[in-house]
Every structure is written in structure tokens, then in C-alpha cells.
Image 1 (cartoon, rainbow, N blue to C red):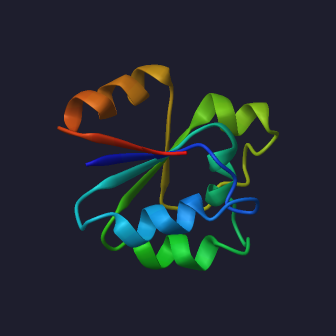
Image 2: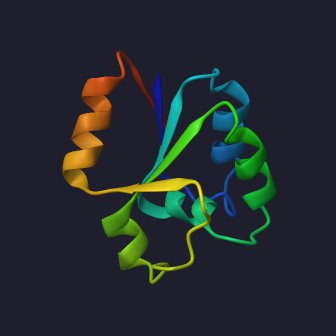
Image 3: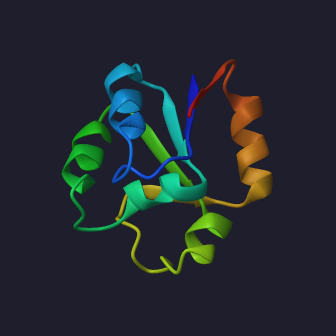
Length: 99
């Protein structure tokens, strides 16, 4: 399953709920303000790194760049463009949006 998160982990608990419910082998795509969860050395970076063993993380690069976060994304987060976003929705049989 592909999970999409569009809320900042510093404003809502949507991201934490997502990674608690994401099954092994699933993916999380961070979009809009959700890309803040991809930051190095943040309050949630340890949770992301711990979950990386079971979940693949992606961040929408245009949203990363729009927020001035280029070069601040932690290792292990895969940056994708809009075409990559579409590819992920095709790759996974289901998409769960966490709002």
C-alpha cells in the first residue's frame, strides 16, 4: 500500500498514525507540508529512520524545494517528481491518504 501524508508532523499527529499503521513492505509518500517529516535531525527523524527498515519513504521534490528544504532531507528518503508520484500510485494496488 502507498500512504500519502500532507500534514506537517509538527502540527498534527497524522504522520505518526501513518507509520504506526503502515505494514511492512508499504511506502509513505510525503507531500505538501508532510515533507517536513523528511528533515535531518528533527524531532521525528529518529522515528523515520527506525521505520525505514520496514517502510520505503519518498518525498515530493517540488514540495521539498518550495519549502526551501533542498539539501536538508535525511538519507534514505527517495525524492520523486510528479511523474514519480504517478508511478508510485500505479506500482501499489491501494493508496491511503492521511489527512
